[in-house]
Amino acid sequence: HSADSYVFQCEEEDITVTQYFLKKYNLRLQYPQLSLVAVGSSAHKRRFPIEVLKVKDGQRKGQLSGEQTGEIIKVASQSPAQRMETITRCLRHADVLTDPTVREFGLDVSDQMLKIQARVLPPPVVQYGNQCITPSGGAWNLRDVKLYNPKKLFRWGVVCLLEESRARGDPQASL
Image 1 (cartoon, rainbow, N blue to C red):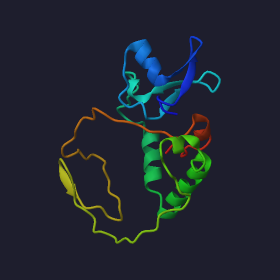
Image 2 (cartoon, rainbow, N blue to C red; image 1 turned 90 degrees about the vertical axis):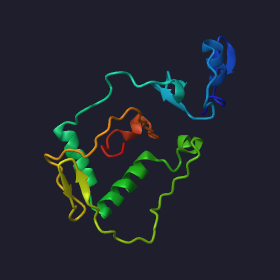
Image 3 (cartoon, one colour; image 1 turned 180 degrees about the horizontal axis):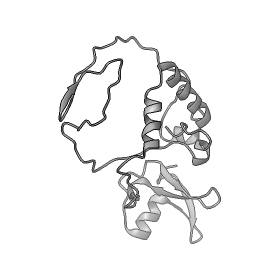
């Protein structure tokens, strides 16, 4: 549902989220056509326009633990066949082919992998602050390597089309 289309009861009156924010906060939504973010249990679910949400201070994570880094490396180093199986399993588990939220975003998801013409490019030379590295076999060691020109990340976003309950039980379902 979008802010323009989702209707709920407020003070015994049917009202859209767009109308509610205008009436209650004198806030005209800039993106009332976007899907709402649902928060809370299914019995007490509240919906918010994404433009009014903020990431709470302290939720940023600066350094990954050794276990988290290991998981990223494990997933990133999968063979193409393993990666295809992981994606296919996650797709089945997430049930995005029939999920109404996916359709609300105007997305069309296929259960078939794309088949494209491709060629293998030579590996690039990767420049770091203290050295240049030519990957071998698609991998290189980043231990004790400083980035060439690191930048701070000031804005970022996350889109998750899974209900939390669907992502449980499969650690890679939330990828």
